[in-house]
Amino acid sequence: LGEPLAISAACNNAASIAIELGDVDRALDKLAVDYPRHAQIVELRFFGGLSIQETSEVLGVSPGTVMRDWTFAKAWLRREITRQNHDP
Image 1 (cartoon, helix red, strand yellow):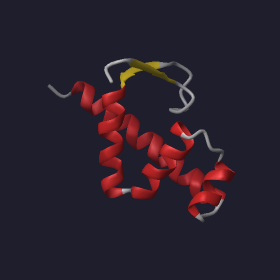
Image 2 (cartoon, rainbow, N blue to C red):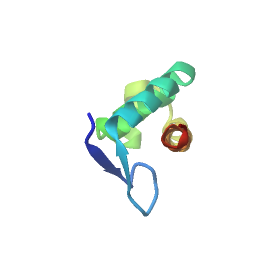
Image 3 (cartoon, one colour):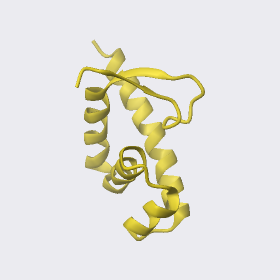
């Protein structure tokens, strides 16, 4: 932990942002409390490298559900990480 991580494709943003892995871990833990399937999708897609189709097969949900949850999770994590970095 403590190493900056460039995330661009995962956040669906053209400009890379540097964040700490600890920020991602804390935000992902918070996401898992209220949205456990969304957190699983992030883990499978971002950390596991699975495709939408592969993720849907692992979780037993439709690819459309994975896409919706993935989109939501990325926005939620982006907001939470931004909030973490701006709170005193």
